[in-house]
Amino acid sequence: MIFKRKIYDRLLQWKKESDGNSALLIEGARRIGKSTIVEEFAKNEYESYILIDFTKAPKAVFSLFDDISDLNFIFMQLQLLFKIDLHERNSLIIFDEVQFCPKARQAIKHLVQDHKYDYIETGSLISIKKNVQDILIPSEEESLQMYPMDYEEFRWALGDTTTIPLLHSFFKEYKPLGDDINRKMMRDFRLYMLVGGMPKAVSTYLETNNMRLVDEEKRKILKLYREDFMKIDPTGKASMLFKAIPSQLESNASRYQVSSVLSNQRSETVLELISEMENSKTVLVSYYSNDPNTGLTRTKDLEKFKMFVCDTGLFTTMLFEDRDFTENIIYEKMLSDKLEVNLGYLYENVVAQILKANGNNLFYYTFLNEKSRHNYEVDFLLARENKICPIEIKSSGYKTHASLDAFSTKYSSRILHKYLIYTKDLGKDNDVCSIPFYMSIFL
Image (cartoon, rainbow, N blue to C red):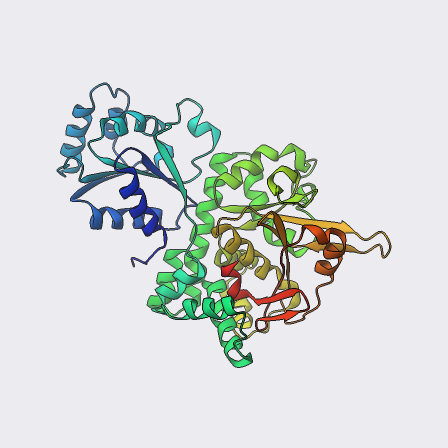
């Protein structure tokens, strides 16, 4: 299925504003729909296009980029190999999975300067050093991040273009929906958490309405990710760190405990590996801020972090991946709102996914109250208007927010808004904005 994606409008904007003076690199995890949306864009917006998939292109295509002194010869060969006519200023050439042909990426500089055609690159694991260490990264390359389908795109796939705009109007007016509507909205949102935003999983759900088949598709994607991690790190450390994400979040520790996954290893010894995993877009990394202020990036501690999975649907499958689907009751419990408290970190993962897709870097904060000797944790921090917005996640309807209160006492002058994200209706508790999970997309 071809799904409507928000990135399409960004592609249109690039085509208009660039006018062939830059190439566009779309980065993102495998299987999120990069190639599909780019090819759809090519079909609709150009007279012709050539898609070069470097995971299966013949050697003759690779060899074209060994010598780029004669671009006209390269264009002639591409037209002969792909049997497609190129039209000056009205054709697009797509370098799909360009990380497998670094010389093609390096050639972008000269291809753009030639100005005959437009160029879009797609890549996974594109930023890993070994893929770019021997080439010159072209300055003529713009980059764009792509993520799994967000909740609004998921609603579009279900044929619903009304709900999200209506919810946004309620959010802007800060007007409660009512308990009955909130329960329905939460049930719809939990379906998104189960299926996730991987296009293949979404299409399988729409075609079959069978969660077992959806789960099988997600297991295939997870297998692909593990294979990718073995390419990054043949020692298997990256795969082990990835697999342990659910158990690490379940432990409710103040950070990812590397030593409990990799013996004789500490956070500081795997910093480069964590960076490579983050660059793969397969995982989301939230860093501890040692002085929560507007310049959060300057205060992050690289050795203290939490990891999330790029797609909560995949995360759901990871929780019980070692069992047969028939033994997996999480789908039934999620849809009926009978999820155990100790699986509440599913909600933390989906908020991380939403915040990241909205363009936010992820930060959190923990601290000890000297008087009570109690540890508090603010799940996420956002920078807004020279202030910060702390966020506390509750996987239930409880309105208690001890961490927000303690954080407010400690840093009252730095705070713009305080958010409690939970399962109940939109509301306020003094100066705390209580927001249902499905409205976190508006933060």
